[in-house]
Amino acid sequence: MFLYGHVLGVDIGPIEHVPRARMPDKLPVVLSREEVGQLITHVDGTMWLIVALLYGAGLRLEECLDLRVKDLDFDRNQIVVRRGKGQKDRVTMLPVAAQERLAAHLSTVRRQHERDLARGEGRVVLPFALDRMYPGASTEWGWQFVFPASRICRDPKWGSPSRFHLHESVVQKAVIKAVRRAGLTKPASCHSLRHSFATSLLEDGTTSEPCRRCLVMQTCGPR
View (cartoon, rainbow, N blue to C red):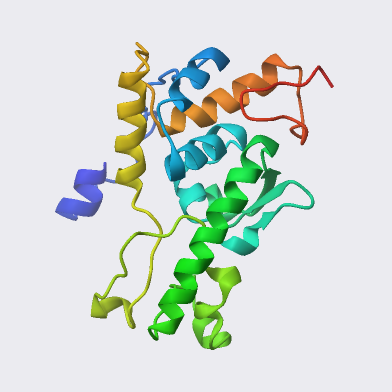
């Protein structure tokens, strides 16, 4: 039907009872708490933090890398996810076990941002047309990426030199290496950590809002 209607441009009229093609259902790869613990011991630094948030907050990889400094609320142990799946905002937990390392990481990122500003740079790309609505917001600390790239992008198609977030492939390769080093037989990926997060909550008896007391690789009792 797509071939005739959109490629060949031939009207074949209404056709009844035509079965729709369906993608086969595949079960997601889920890691146990022990397997997540083995995996996370084989990453460090920034990658440790990203893995901790993927599992401890149930974030998708793109959502994690898109995080801005203003999206982290240490006082309320919350993360605001902007424009997630379906372009919807939501709130999830900020794992307590990751907060100390995350705060130290942000201090390092802030010093880097201040050095960028001293060189006349320090700009970040803003979503939609916010840079037009709020001139100067692109250099403010709150709008900076939590996990910035190591290099500044100077491609003129993005305007002034900007510091983007880490590329997804960098994290994906690091997680795959960690899975191999940990000796896991499951073909786990970044998204497997999100499935593992949801499964862990279900195993703990959580049926609605996740418990904000939960830590990375640590559980609380049934709610």
